[in-house]
Image 1 (cartoon, rainbow, N blue to C red):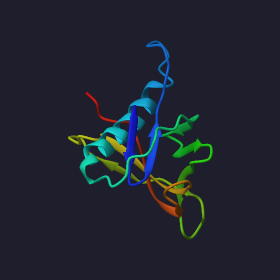
Image 2: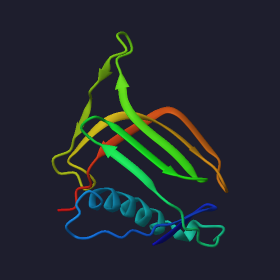
Image 3: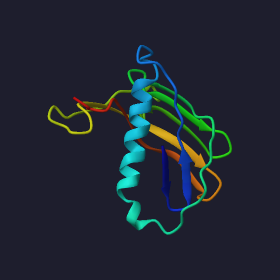
Image 4: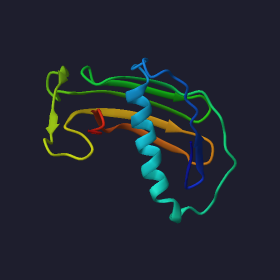
Length: 135
């Protein structure tokens, strides 16, 4: 699958067996993001050649921790929000029983740096951890 958005292109190649559930949720999440990006394809100014890169993705929704690394392209991490007084991990959720994207989202914070065609540097920004609501 190839997606392009304002000078950034990512070619996602994934191979896993149906019995290997470890990869299905992250792959569905990444695919959902890429499909949403493709829905805005008419606004693209440039289309670049495809790049194939390793995608290292780890997520633990309950612990509110995530890590995404595509070497040479992007490095991102997510962590729990902290209580401003005690600095202890704080837990907050969005409960959306009839939600089309998710039923329950854990609130967190994140950092992300991208390189190549689009430079982005986000530090201690808002984040959510959730499983896609597909059924």
